[in-house]
Every structure is written in structure tokens, then in C-alpha cells.
Length: 208
Figure 1: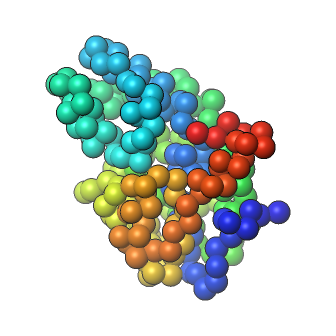
Figure 2 (figure 1 turned 30 degrees about the vertical axis):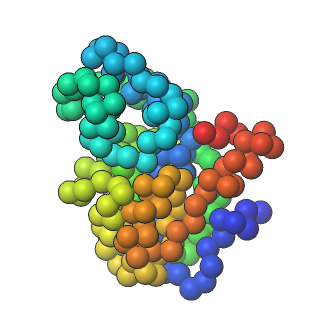
């Protein structure tokens, strides 16, 4: 049975889902990957600081980290190291069942896409490992657009690939930056965080 808080309200023409933290619980794997990558630059990643910024694109995260720590980072090298570390941890990621259930319930009923701030390699592998990839007609990542979240670019491209007007789409998100991106695209947004907090409280999963 679907969580009523996650049920989209008619009318809508398409559904668009964020990946990390929304469809899939990647929090621990991503944090460990960034911590591993940054250690080569003698930068210690503060868990609370990082968790408050999980909705940022990689480059914005690194820019804020430079400001916070004074470190000078080679962005492409840090991103590559983090992606490599994530690949070793990808077997630990699992779907968030309530959100995945929404996508499963709408398969073959309405067009659906993923709109993620992650890299294509990481997002496609995450969806493959969790068995979710066949649910979606399109996958849009940070690699496909000029600006990452909170800019609306990934959501606008997802709507275009689904042949749906943005205002007819419902987006699912778990961060302030992601919510801002979907709203800026003109979509209706369902914030999954209340449902995921309940999941954690009742022992249904690890949550964030």
C-alpha cells in the first residue's frame, strides 16, 4: 500500500524522481566515498557539514568545502577519486521502499524519469544495482546539463525527454536544493523526507 503522503494528486502527466536519498539510500556510501577521496588532500570531511549539503552538485560542494577549510582542491581529481571509492561501496546501497513503490505502481501508466545531481556513471550503476533502472523512460544527470541543482536544468531536460510540460510533472525530492530545482522548473514537488523519517523510526530501513 502506498504511503498517502507520496501519492501524486491528479492531474499529472509524468513523474520525475531524484536518485540519491530519494529513490535510493546512498547516504552512507556517498559520505564514505567523499571522505576517502578528500583524505588524499588532507581534508577531513565533517559528517554534519556534509549531510547539510547533500543536495549540492559535486563542484558546488567542493567550492563550499574550499571556503570552509581553505584547501585548494583539484575538482576533477577529487570527483574521480570519489566516484572510484563509490564503485567499491555500491553493493551497500538499497532502494527506499516507499518511494520505489510509487515508481513501481506507475510503471507503464505514465512516463517517468530520474533527474539527479550525480554523475551518469554513478547514477546508472546505482539504478542497475538496485534493480530500478527498467522503471524509467529517461535518466538525466549532472553530466547532461550546464547547471546542477538548485538550478532547474535537470528537471527541465527530464520533462522534455518525457514529452511533458514541466507544470504537468510531479517531482520527488529529499533536499532543499532539489526541491528548489523542481519548483524553479515549474513542477509540483513531493518532499519525501517526512516519509523517510517515519521509515527510520519504525525500523523499515536505515534512512539518512
